[in-house]
Amino acid sequence: MTLILRGLVVHTPKNPFHEAEALQVFSEGGLAIAEGRIAAVGSFTDLIRQFPGAQVHDHREGLLLPGFVDTHVHYPQTRVIGAMGYTLLDWLAKRTLPLEAKLSDNKLARELAREFVQLLLRNGTTTALVFGSHFQGATANLFGAAEDTGLRIIAGQICSDRMLRPELHTTPQRSYAEQKMLIQRFHGRGKLRYAVTPRFSLSASEALLEVCQTLFQEHPDLHFTTHINENTEEIRTVAELFPWSHHYLHTYDRFHLVSERSVFAHNVHPTEPELVRLAETRAAVAHCPSSNAFIGSGIFPMNRHLRQGVRFGLGSDVGGGTGFSLLKEGLMAYMAQRYASDSVNLTPAHLLYLATQAGAEILGYGAVVGSFAPGKAADVLWIKPEARSTLEVHFRHLDSVDQLLGSLFTLYGEARVARVWLDGREIVLD
Image (cartoon, rainbow, N blue to C red; front, side, top):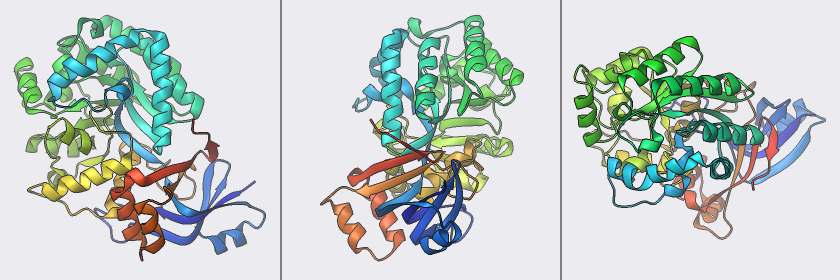
């Protein structure tokens, strides 16, 4: 049975950084869904003619968007959000790592995993690249919770062997064995994928990075993710720990961990050689604007990334970030660029692209999710304004969809993700 979702349909099948008219809008539109995929997108009149026996669901009170793609978020950190007054390394030591150390408790890990997955979905995230836990069992709980809901995730067990809390440290031998088991159990199972995940070079010895290299070589379809150039103190410390390195990226590149399947979070303070190398390898960056502001790391040099051709998407970076909403991250990205010395003039089309198709592309899912192109998975959001809100006034009175989309990002706190479909199946939001 074909299902048609009727309403205002908005997506960005093209890249607005490089192409005109990237935002595609169907004001009296519809999405036809069959067998979990987008069968067609267009005007409702045309779709009902094309699929005369289709079941129709009316969603004209809000707008229909592709599911959001979060390119950097931490599963153990939901309850850390709002820890004010810290810079990165203090925030880790005093607020974040003590909680992460508790995930050796399997009952707590399972509770946090279920909580985390539901919060992603309630905020419209249907695909995510997730930092797992330092513990094998807790990371397995994350995969299990995602599988139970149908969430598309790439995740991995975090590995570190120095400069954190002792209970979070591993050894190269143990890390290889535990990650190997997780890869064999979860990678490629349904919508689950595995990412080799050293926390950052600061907490990973050369021996541990060699383990990451070995896993990456043994399983060429794995992903890789970590942090880079987030904080100036962090960068100085990494340079001291790796005196042979030319720059931060080199600490990963030496171990062949910089590739098209690699995503590096933050990159607030890159050197030009690093940007050149990221572009050469088609490695990507997760831009986390609210976290960059909240922890005081700095403003993302978006224009420098664009000039060098470095790909990037949006990350919520919970819990350094201020919540799971990629609408909020879009607004923060916009505002940061208003203050940047070398700024990019972002439009609502840019923000929607960064929250959807851009993220899908850097995760290797560009042909699978991110827009409503026919054949893609039917990961769909119905977003409505809260009753009697400023956003509802805008929905009733604004003249253009571009203006409406700008209001949606600006007034994200008054937007409600009313329904979510994963592969065409409506998800019950707990």
